[in-house]
Each structure stands twice: as structure tokens, then as C-alpha cells.
Image (cartoon, rainbow, N blue to C red):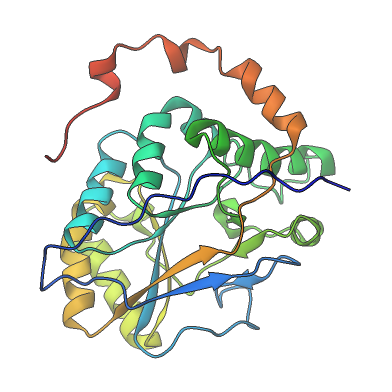
Length: 276
């Protein structure tokens, strides 16, 4: 039995909104992740909590230079929020960017250590668990605090044994209601048109995007404006309590953190002022 995790400082609140015409946040919901609830109708049908014209904005595969900060700026300009599912390796490459995400008040979960497809038959069960757990440990290492117990499988590949495992870890699983397919888009307008067409058809939903993708970062200001014009409201999802990262993986990360990719870069290549 794991001991109770020590209390951690509260997450910074979103900044006060100075844009009277902003998309904003319609409501905030708190998620009790006991037993590993699943969200997103592409895979999980039982929890239909969104009201008509409500959306949840989700972003995978960050943190990444230029693109993630641009996504953060677009969200800040519209006084709205999202859930970020970072790749563990990327979190160790760019901890300063992931801290920006967290400090702006967005929810941060995890998306495995290396973006491995956990349905790959070559992976053992232990290797699949390692991908999940090391991903959470890397995000905690980058942030200095435990992230939310929110997880998204790479490529939305859900091995049943890992779904069950996440239930034992009290981690919520996020599929989506609509996929932007932004990673396939060759221009930003395609991202906007795809999302709006799908959300207008469904009337609501959890939207899957990637802060790793340049076109998504470029498309987001217009997309948020279109959502506002369409009468959509953003729902913020918060976890009742943080994930309990397993010490074994924290110890691994402490060793890995000595890698030169983390420590050897000059400050001006790491931190860039994008808005002041």
C-alpha cells in the first residue's frame, strides 16, 4: 500500500482576464479519478458530462519550443484553458516550457515517456507500464510538483490490460470526441475547418490537438475566435488530487536528469520572451 502523497503547493491560478470579448471559461469541473474513469466518446461512452455547446481543449506531444508558447499565448489572449498531455522525454528536454504551461493555470497530465504505441506486441507488460509511469515521473521532474492523474494513450491505442492497470492507479484516461488530425494538415486553415465541421456536427466535445504542431499553434487564435462566434463554451477539467508518482521512476529520472540536453544549453536558447 502506498503512503499518502505529501501535500503540494496549489497550482497558480489563471491570470485575470483583460479581454471583455474573450472566449473565457464557461465552467470548471473537478474529476474524481478513483478507478480510472474514461473520457471521450471515441472509446468511452459512459461519462457524458458535457452540455450542449461545451468543449474541452486538449493538446498532446509537447512541450516544444515556439509552438507550445504560441499555443499558450493564444489561450491567454482568449482567457481560456486546456489540458496538456506532454511526452515525458520532451518534458525533460524543455522543462522551462512545461513550467510555463503549469504556471499559466492549465491542467497537465501525461502521454507516456517516448510516445510508444502501447499496443505494440513487441512490448512486454512491464515495458508498457514503464512507459506510463516514467512519463508521469518525467512530468513531475520538469514541474517540480506532481501532475494531474490524467493520461492519454499515444495514437489512441488502448491495450485493455493497460486500461485496467490505470484503473488500479486511479488515473483517468482521455480519448477524445473529435480529432483535429492537425498532424496531417499542410496548412492552418485545414485545422480550423476540420475542428469546426466536426464540433458543429456533434454540438460539443473533447477536442484533440497537438501543441507540438506548428499549424496548430498558428491556427489556434482563429479557431478560438470561431468557437466563441459559434456560441461554444470551454470547460476546464481539474483533478481532485494529483497523481502519485512511483519512487522507482523518480529515481530513474534523477539519474537521467544529468543528461547534457537538460543542463548544457545557454539561458537565451532556453528562455525566450514571447509576451510582456
